[in-house]
Length: 252
Image 1: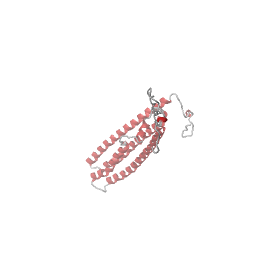
Image 2 (image 1 turned 60 degrees about the vertical axis):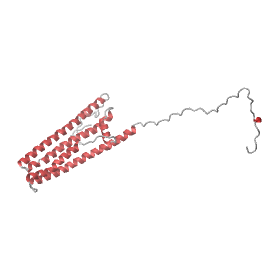
Image 3 (image 1 turned 45 degrees about the vertical axis):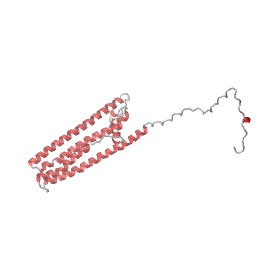
Image 4 (image 1 turned 90 degrees about the horizontal axis):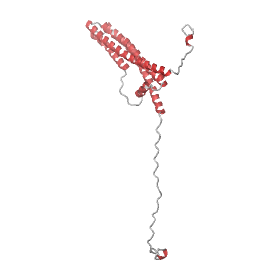
């Protein structure tokens, strides 16, 4: 039962769980479609943010060089720091939504298995195409630009101990501390999904019916060998007996 911060109980939330078996399947399909759309919109937002960051970077770089302003060039570091926050947030929405669809929705409805199949194929033993995760690509772009920023400031000021250069280096160190932490947390969650996928693949292989052993075909029936029956002697032929044979000699 829900309670507000003042400790008052909301009377409208007495029924904590609403169960409607007739429309449960339709509700799952609707939620599945909405969440898939949310993933697509978050990915599109990341593309727009990255394009805006690159455009702003080129603009600031041109202005700082033309005006010989080292402090103007230093603005690239906070620009990419804030942009990385937004990119990491959207990538977090994508991966958590996909995880919820896989573990909470698909097991409750037959025919919904995209996320499960995707994870089993990605982390299983099946062959899969090369993947370059967008989060790591965006992190590499941001890290490269911030790493080159002190050199840009030095190119503008031509002094190693100038205030703009010290400011650029200090902000870059802060950026990389936060940036590396975000990469570690993202990678940790990816490994967690990989372990879940391995367990799912093992459970799927155990649940699959094993093929029945091949039964040997019955050998063809064979009839016992019969001794050939000799034809009767022709008529008029005297029957031979042991008495008519010559006596046996010793040694023969």
